[in-house]
Structure formats: structure tokens, C-alpha cells
Image (cartoon, rainbow, N blue to C red; front, side, top):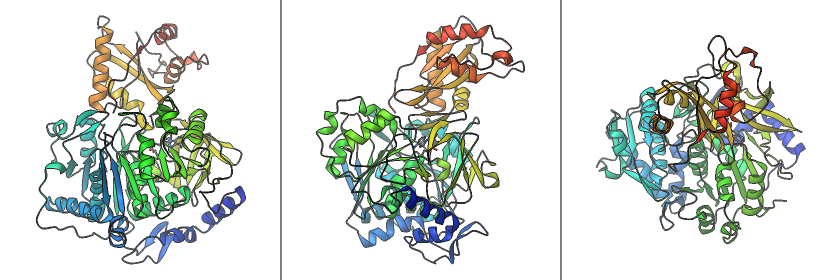
Length: 597
Ligand code: WTA
């Protein structure tokens, strides 16, 4: 089965042997993968289990490994193929051209005084320059901080300020789904920072972008993600150990070949766009296809056209995208020749059976294994995947990657010990990795010898694969003048996986509900971004609370989900409100999509 996809652990026993060895002799396992790294000075040992240190004495550079060495070896080979919003918008960036782009951006950063360890903000759409900007930072030892272009200027400002960023790289605007979206004009008034607009810049005459050699303690990037506390948290990743982890997982899980064309539909604004659009494919000198348009504009065939045109071998996308494309006629897929595909990947949310089946049958033609990959911003790279190709279980991510120890404690997936992808620190959640144990916040259970993920156990909502905290929503909504109190809970959504349901108590009875809803949506949009819209809003006279005044969210969640399994209400101080909330919930206001981003 899956003749195009071969690995050495295609059955349970082979996997178990390789896995056991990787845990018992981590240095040996990681050494075999570190051989692919080009060093300036080779490390004396890859992993020292006594000190927990990676690459003792080793010196290298991430940009050198992902760009320079391929510009020397295969200068003409396409490193990046970009597709824009319209079908005829295509750019091909060779390895040599990518190096030139990286050097130009790095020299601008240097001319603005950026030095090693300075933080550089990147607020850009999915264009080759965004990838080049990340690599330019890596080249000069600066720490990049990519902020998804769909986040609002306020969310951007929070991240830049918290991380003490020195400059911000951006562009004038971009097009998505047929609409022009402004960037530079949206931010220049709101934020006091040195802004470099990459499409109207004159590059300095003196190109000065020497490689800053990195050792194992040096950092590569900060990326913000949502946690269960109010504010988003900054996840800091190292340079060289992170590169080793994303490279090793990519090679093993996708079974890559040297001339593969690889297409991942994520965005550099998320961790998948860092690890598996930028660093892992470019480390191996593969061609990485990037797309800045919408999968359904101008028709729902964009992914299939791109796969056919570029003869894509590995395709990596999210369940939300699959579910939204599954609604269209199969013919839109079947009219394209997708026979180049060898492996399919899924990431970001649990994949439901019907989406899995459609992906496997209609897109993969039953020929391609589906790598359902579970991981997080904090882990840098993939942790769970179906590391066996004889049997496919829809919706079961499967086995831990080699060298990573997992356990399920009280129904929660927990990671133990050291592996090179784990972030160095989390700004805003400093105790997260205490005692060598990392609680993932995801519910999990064993399915035979495999692990099946059920979803978040904490106050994080996963909307279309995007992590958003209920506390972030509540913070944005409580800013609205007419709002006295708010509680936001997650409810299942057929298309997005989950969505936000907001219960709002107005501070006066004469406020028109339509007006309040409008203001609430406006506030989530300006505080977080247009991806953070609650789909349902119920305006209620009060919220259920304990005697000490704590909102009983679990009860609200059950009501929102229409579940009769009400939690113990003996702790609710105002139980008379429950019936009223139930009735209003049934007539809650559905807020239709207003913006695609
Ligand atoms: C969820 C994205 C089920 C999970 C790479 C996790 C998944 C959160 C899967 C991390 C999967 C990701 N199956 N759930 N295959 N992949 N998740 O940090 O809840 O943006 O905790 O990283 O996405 O989201 P993050």
C-alpha cells in the first residue's frame, strides 16, 4: 500500500524499535539527523543528556543552511513558487534569487542599525519577500517576530511593544479574494516604530549582510499564540536545535525526496508557515509553493490547479480548508491531474471522518497516506503523526515522533524530557515547562497503541485552526461602552471546527441589540482582527454566577451547545436565570461573515 511512500517503520514493531532506541540513545538518533546540517564548526556532541544541551561547541547559521548552500549547489532550481490572488499571478524565485533577496533585506536591516538579538517585526502577506525577510533576520542573528497580516493594528502593537521590537517590515497592501487590503496605511498612525515598507525602499549601495554565526544558545524567532490567560503569549524558539527538529520531522513524516515540489497552504503568520513553509523545505533545498490568495477565489479550484501546474508531490493543509472545499462538486477536483501527489498532510485541528475520507478518496485517489500531524507553536515541529503506513485511522494522529516522550495524565497530553523543537521560553507563561513536563492543554486518549486528540481542554478556541483565547474575546468585548459583562464560550462549528459564542449583559435595557452587536464586532475586529468574530451573540439580563461572583462558564457552554447535561447547578447563586438564558440562546443572534480574512 502507498507504494510512493516508504519508511523504515511501516509496522508497529519496526516503529517501536526505532522509537525505543531514540529515547534510550537520543544522541545517536539526533546525530543521524544532524548530519544534514552544514557547520562552520562541528559540535563535539549533538545532545548531551547530562547537561541537556544541544550542539556543544557547534557553530552554524540557519540562513546559511536554508539559502546559501543551495544557491551555491543548485542556483537555478526554484526555491519558492508563488501564486497570487488571480490565476495568472505566478512568480518563481530561484535559489540564487532568494539569496539576493535575503541579502538585500538583511543589508537594509543592518543599515537601520539592527544587530544580533534585536527583534524585527514582520507584518506581511504570503509573498516571497515575507519568507526572505524571516531568513534575512536569521542571517544577521536578529530575532523575527511575524504578526499575521489579518491581525489588527492594535494586536500588532501589543506584540511589537511586548517584545521590544526595533523595526517593522511591511508592504503597502495585498489582494485576497478579489479585495485590496491595506497594510502600511493601517499601521503608521497607530504605532510609533521605524517602519520599512519593502515595496518602496531603495536598497543601500553598500551591501553589508555578512552571516552572523550562531551557537546553540542563539534564538531564531518569537511567535505569539493564545493561551488560557487574558493576553497572547510570546513563544521564543532557538535557532539551531529548532532547525534540526523541523528538518528531521519533515524528512521522516513526509518521506521527502530531493526533487519534491511541496505545497503547504498555511501562512507565515502561524507556526506551520515558519516550520513547514519556510525552514524545513528550504533546509533540504526543495521547492516550496506558497499561495497568497483564497482557496475559493476566483473559483474553488485554486489548490487543485496549483497542484496540477506544479506537479506537487506533498500537499499539507488544514481540516477547515478541506471542509470548505468538500462542499463543492467533486468534479472541480477530478478534472485536474493530481497524480503527482504522494503524501497528504493535515494540521491545526482534529480532522473529522467525513473530511478525512474526502481528502483520502477525492484528493488522494486512495493512493496517498494522510499524515494527520498534531503539534503546537510551543513544540516547534510535529509531535504526533501516523508513523506507520500500512494502516490509516481517520482522525487518529497516532504516534509520538522519535525522541519525544508523551504521556496522558488525567486525560491531557503531556510531553516529557528533552527534544530539540521545544521552545526555549514562553513570555507570559514562564512556568509552562517546569520540571521537564509540558502540559499541552489538549485532551487525548489511547486508541489501541495510538493517541487520538480530542481538542483543547482549556479556554482556548480553535477557530479554523487558529488559536484564540476566550479571555482575548472577552477583553475586546468588555471595552464596548454598552457592555456591562461578557462571557465567551467555544461551540462546535461544522466548517470552522469551533466558533465563539458570546453572552453579553448590557448596562442599560434601552440599548438597541443591533447597535450593540455592531459595536461588539467592531471591537473584536480592532482589538484582535477580523478572524476573531463571535458567530453567535446572546444578549442576556444576567450571567450564572457562583456565590463568590465567578461566572459558571461550563454551564453557559452546555446551554450554548444545546446540551441537556447541565453541570451541577447547586453552586449557582442565581439559578432562576438559567431558563431565561436557555430561551434567549435559542433565539441568539447569528452574525454572518463580513470579511474573509
Ligand atoms: C490543535 C498549530 C487535533 C491542538 C500547529 C493544538 C490539532 C493547537 C492538530 C495548536 C491535529 C493542531 N489534531 N488538533 N492534527 N494540530 N491541533 O499552536 O488543539 O497554532 O493544541 O499550532 O491546535 O495550535 P498552534
